[in-house]
Length: 134
Image 1 (tube, one colour):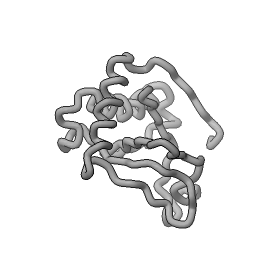
Image 2: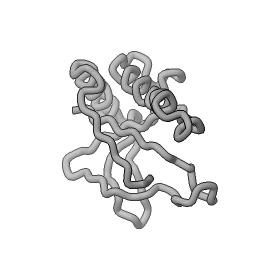
Image 3: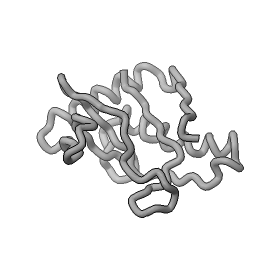
Image 4: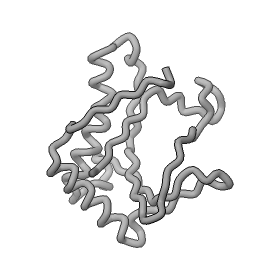
């Protein structure tokens, strides 16, 4: 159901989260490290993002970010193990998005696509995992 929300604390060691945050912030400082989001006429977020995949070199030299990406991708596997009938169709995206919010940056809950399964513009997402690096 769309209203299902689960919050889990302490899923990775604090040292890993701190390291990943430092690596992501270092990437945000570089001119070519992250791109500003653009939501058109809809004012839903103001941040800088980058896409990461431990298999394509985008996290190379960043062991904290590699651990975070592996963890996030592993959530689908765990859900299938726990509830195979409900989650056996999950597909894991190749990339994870990292976001940095500068002073004054914000995020407003919104949908990126059509919520109707199979409709044009829909990605049929059933699970969204967010990991705060704080």
